[in-house]
View: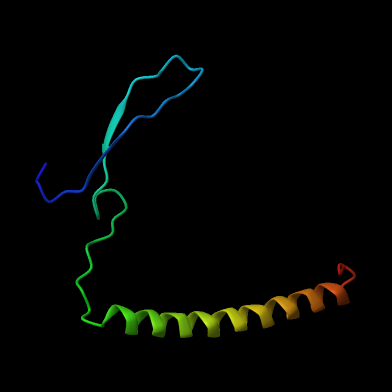
Length: 81
């Protein structure tokens, strides 16, 4: 294991099974889930958060409209409140 790996040691307790041995695992980017480290995109954090928050507001507004349409359609089918 290299010094650059993020190491996370933890104990898993399986209470009631008689198997209470500690387990040591390693959590490192790309190690288990297939993701790779992402290079910094040089966009300042504050600017990026403002952009992402604006995108989120738009997406949530669309979600609200879709939810209302779904409930309206379910009501038409006799499954409303």
